[in-house]
Image 1: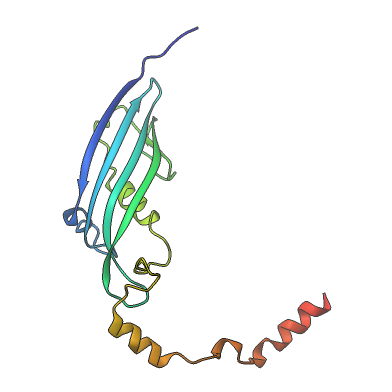
Image 2 (image 1 turned 180 degrees about the vertical axis):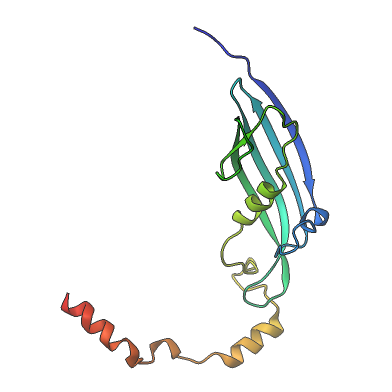
Length: 166
């Protein structure tokens, strides 16, 4: 039985506002995160395990105020040797033997965004009450129409008929 030696090394990176400034269109402008990258070097490839934890400032979808949202994620990235650089696969990067550095900023950026939920709302307090901006909640309440979702809409009649006939 042949055993291959594995070389494992760990790197820590701080991710702050300076990192997010590199991405002009980023909805995240601030964050305090740590990325721990474990690099496992095998004879034919390098496996990266990337763990990111901390918090980012995001806009609340209800009241639009900024708040800290916790981020905790772990992702894998595989690097293999090939004839030409190729990063078209989101999980595998192909590098040449002439490449001596690997820029993973874009991957870190994407992993952070993928760790966020689609809807971002201020968390409720211990009593189950919203911690959103009370002025905005009051304003939203002024525009709330009771029973609006139960209102009849005739535009759906034809679709309902076709579904019933099937």
